[in-house]
Structure formats: structure tokens, C-alpha cells
Image: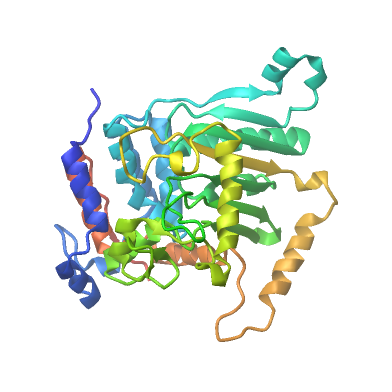
Length: 415
């Protein structure tokens, strides 16, 4: 029999992640040390990467997933935290468990190819034998987003190795984590990777006071020589909603240009921004070119929602509601650079070095997309594990208790 967590319990656990009562904010701001059984001063403790995976894997198994799928989710969320994207790592696990418990996500679903060149040929004749081999449409069957995403990118990479390019679009999916995970899958195979996904409506389009598109993130990446590379992973809103959740957890205000309040005006109050869920497009207001972020978000919607037949735009369920399945659309591409002019990897290496060597306007150097993540991963490796915010550790301990899973083991920092 599957072990599930009661709805009330999970709601309380999710509340721990976004709660910002004045007392908690003061505690975090003051840097008050929090302790737990057998653990002293969490500021000097880290969680080894393998331990993070183990914990998430066991929680997902208790929620009803297969061992293989639990490992997929565990590795993905750990990678997000390892790279410094805490809004999309451990922070998201409770949401996945709650969707399974509420029977909004099917933990046993397997992605299914709806259309590829073989099925098209059956319906339309041999004329299309060579025309559609590089594409596929997949139904995620309302499965875990990471499972659907991994399946689709692997399929796109397989096609790219055969035909030079592969594109797979999916519908019937769910929140799939950080886009960059799938991009890096392609990079590991010396392919250029691209992916994007639509999301629950959170973006207020330019001149609107109501959400109409999601954060609609995208990622593109290409490997260079000697372990270098370009990994762009970004929302088309000014910021992902998870960054506002983190600001709430830390008791901090948000920068101007991130979000609108319930009154439709720009706000710096993190709680008000989270309550209204009206993120501004990348670029912010119209006079600072926010319409460009709006346009990018719409581009993603075309590739993910319009192309696949999934829900789209304002028709997707509201964020963190359980009244209907998400039915998200996602797009995955892999390109073999060797199908084009030879030497692209060397040219990219040269370009990245040239950009980093440009004169800086201040003390900080010019960076390439992916550099901050590499710096964070280096620090995690030096510390011997991932440093989590005390509130995240508290929430994870409650999850462990109520799901009868062994809590994460914290160890002293190596440095």
C-alpha cells in the first residue's frame, strides 16, 4: 500500500517554506542559530549531494513513484540546488508529493510517443518518409515533469545524432524543474541543447494588470573545450516565482521591477508579490523594455502550448491549485554542431575567453551564462555538501517525520 501524506500535513509543510511571520523574519535577520537533535549550529553544516538524492528519492518512493523515477527526480532537484537554483530544488519536492497525494499527478505514468515519422507515414504515405524523421510529439500522460523531460530530451538527442537535429514537443506534462538540466544532457553528448516550458499564468503582460502567460523559462547550451561552456537558463519574467518565495523565507524585500501588487502597481513587498502572483516580464516596465520579455514568453507559449495541444496561457491552472491537472507543454531540441561548419567548439571556446577578458566596469569580472553556477558548484564541492537555509532544513525534517523517512544527515563543512 502506498504511503501518502495527509493534505493538511503537506499544506502545513508548504507553509513552512513561504511563511514569513515577523518573528521568523527577525530570527533570520538576526542570524539566530537553530539547532536540532544531534546537530549543532546549522550554519556550519552541509548536506552531501548523495544524501540529498537519497532523501528525495525515499520521499518520492513513499509518495508512490517507481524507484527509477524517484532517482530521476532526486538527481534533478539535487542538481538544481548544487548549481545554486534553490527555488527549483528541494524547495519543490513537497509540491510534487502534494500533487501525487491529491491525485493531480500520476506517479506511475509513462510518456508515450503520439506522432513521429513512422506514424505520420502510416497516415499520409511514403511521401513523408524522409520529411519528419527529426521530430516527435509526446504525451506525458500527466506524469512527473522530470520523467517526461528526461524521456523527451533523450529522444531528441537520439534523433540529432541520426539526422543532425532533433525536436520533441510534449503535452500532458507537469513542472519539470530547471530547464538547464535538459540542456546539459545534450551538452554531455557534444550536442547543442534547447528546451522551454509553459507554466501556470504568472506573468502580467505589458500594460496588463492580470496574468496571461507563465514564467515560461527557456535554456540553451553548448559545450566548449576543456570543460567550459555556455548554459543560459532563464525565465522570461523578470524573476521566477521561487525567488520571491526565497525572499519571503529570508524576510527580505524584492527589487523594484520584479512584480506587481494586487492593485496592479509595482511592489517591493515579497508577501504582497507572492499573494498577487503578478510577475513582470523580463525587462520590467514598458519604458525599460519589458515588452521584450513579454514577447519571449509568448514565443515559448507557441513552441510549448500552441504547437503541442496542451493547455496554454491563461487556460493553464493557477499556480499551486489542485482543481485540475496541469497539462503543461514543453519543447526539447538537440542539434549536432558537426552537421554544420567544422570547428564550432573551438570557436565557442575562443569567444568565451574573449568575452571574459573584456574590461570590467567595476571590480567584478565579465561572466558567461553558467559561470555563477560553476562557482557555486565549486564552493559546494569545497564545503563537502550543499548549504541549505534553516527554514528549508526545518521543513525537510517535518517531511521526513510525517512520511516516516530518515531525515537528511548534516555533516560539518570541509572548509
